[in-house]
Image (cartoon, rainbow, N blue to C red; front, side):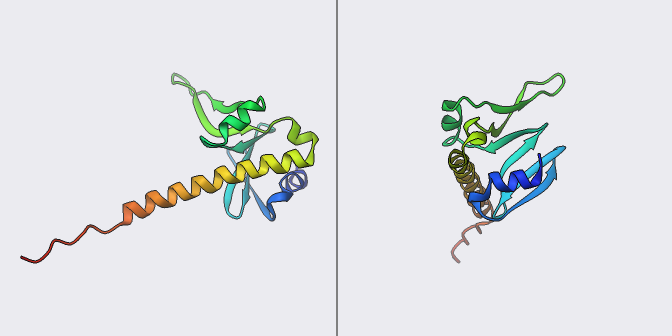
Length: 125
């Protein structure tokens, strides 16, 4: 997808960065990945809270096949069609994706803090 178009689509999130990845593009807001463009389709970041919203709008999760293995479902949903037709709807979907990205970032930070937590010292006897 054209970078100018993507910047317009995600304008509600402020300054965004677009980077090449997975043979497509990754869209970042404030350093958090909020969307991917894969084979010309726009996929928005998802999590347990966002997935029902995307599904209610008729979107499907990004799933890919690996030879001889079960399909892999990624935490991204195809952008609902109304996002392409209505700037206000797109701002809403961008906010949903950004919320999922923020929650994912917070969860990862929590895991890293727990891993780094020093073990309690044993009292001297």
